[in-house]
Image 1 (tube, rainbow, N blue to C red):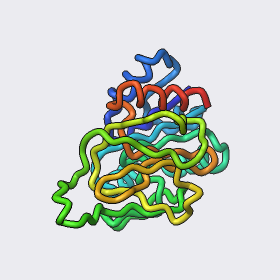
Image 2: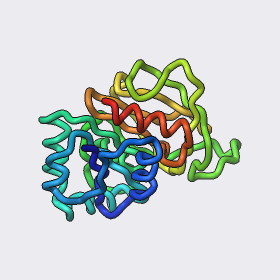
Image 3: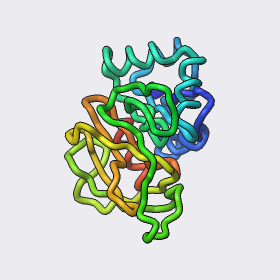
Image 4: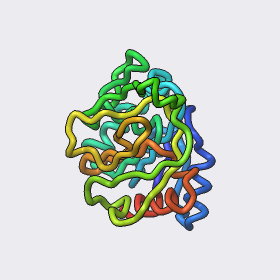
Length: 203
């Protein structure tokens, strides 16, 4: 069973519908600790502010269970958009500590004004896959839909799975053992996003 974590933030229905579209049936949306405790895979979605996301996880009393599933049971976990940022140690956007599963921090885009690029970064971008992994093919031209003002900076480059470019190169996918993150929205990325979710379901 794949559990899409409901902590009051994220495009839950869109992610669930994308799984249905690709024929993955054993997927539920839940913020119930007992349901999450039974998950074989966990997807952590999210949009909005970092501190709000962490506060919601705390209020829902989900952090201990998520830590156990990810770090002890080592079930596959995929964080998307804000969900990926919450995997890091913290964010310039707020003061709360992140989950700390990935050796990274979340920072704001600091772009050269001469580039005349507007933040948030919004739209389709190609990505460059940095290392072999089960979620995405290194040999294909993959492009995904992004909406974000902050991005992840990995301290451990071995955990950087893919990068993209918006004024600067930035980390757009991370991986450490069973834990994965994607800054883009696979549920909005058509066939490219479908493939990532399909591969995640197969882990």
